[in-house]
Image (cartoon, rainbow, N blue to C red; front, side, top):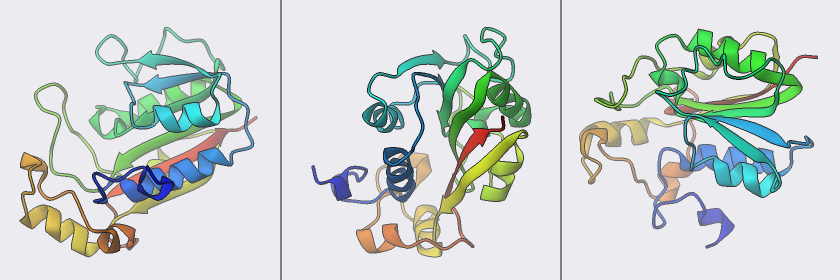
Length: 202
């Protein structure tokens, strides 16, 4: 599969394609050493990006309901080189509390990589609830004691309208596959997915 198509669905761009390409590009060139990481929940989407850059990295997982991201008492302060999550923060009742825990368990200089959404139909029920939507600035404001390296988003008016108007086989999530022209467009006024990359202050 061509690198260009790595995050497409049979050639169609999804709401996450642009975001995952951007994160992949950043991670591939990141001048950080990571030996141990914590994934908040299972993250089959982000795992390959991290493992390609840091192949020897050991990943622990904090999967709900065994672990509550709002109280990660099982993990010591300053323990991880990297903590990451993918489309999780909007499903946590108090994500600002989870953010404080994420920063607590990061080593000084450690990385946080987290994705969320500014738009999505309500989803996740009945397995888990759906509480929030985050613009890039709002996502950044969750985390204190960090230096933000990247805060960004992807979306555009045409993609959002298509999602609301069309059911292309994804049920209640609507239309979620786009041709490349739509998928490459990014309009900061109409974000769909958002993400942040930061480092914990020393």
